[in-house]
Length: 280
Image 1 (tube, rainbow, N blue to C red):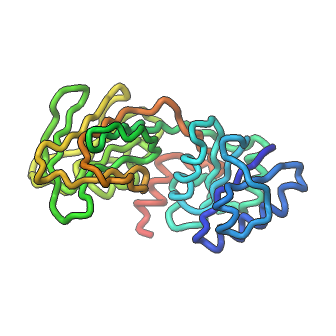
Image 2 (image 1 turned 45 degrees about the horizontal axis):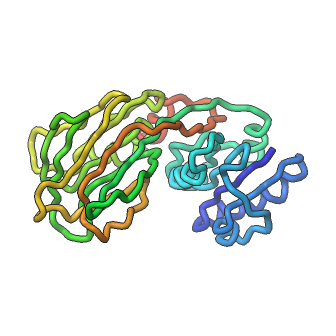
Image 3 (image 1 turned 90 degrees about the vertical axis):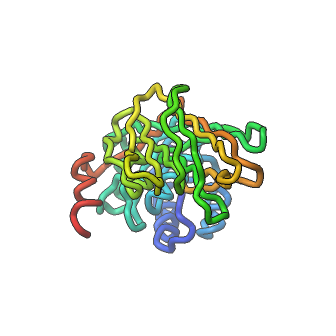
């Protein structure tokens, strides 16, 4: 099996775990690869490769590393196993299992696969289409370098929904409902659903609430007031270049899902309880 590792290069434990996997997995008959930048960050003596060419992708870190692994797939239909070596690890699926044992179990076909919806995010900057981006968690449209709140006009399937002066707007997948959207007051949404969650962040309003919309939804965000249009777009934690004026963002469910593996047997309710409600 071709196994591609995505370690968090800023986490010494992730790098040492990657080195241990590089040393052990070839003896099981597996081919191991990493991206060139990851190999350099962790000083790994292993062949360079692409996540898209693998049979299994292993993310070594926390939830941010799982998101980065999903982006490295670049649309390829390859399962991702997250090994939690970070703080939260809500997207990771190995529990407290030994990383080598967990990877061996996944490579042998063990565990449960969860298909997670993605978002397709089309951005218009300075009158030009700046491309379409994919998000597993969310897209945030809001405050740029300036301190002023922005004014966002939001439409759903072409129908006006609201116009808010606010810090910004989160449009999330059910997977992302437990990330920024949750911090902004959004609901927990089961990751098995195909839905779009819209959460205004810091709106200057007493009656604004989050929205859970169906899978056919297209959310269109524009900035009608030039005086409150200093906004940028952040996709899964990565800010897109915002040197030109942001004009429009269109968000729909993506054409592909991300396949996450779970070996720990925990369902959504148990994961939420242990991660968010246990008081840890």
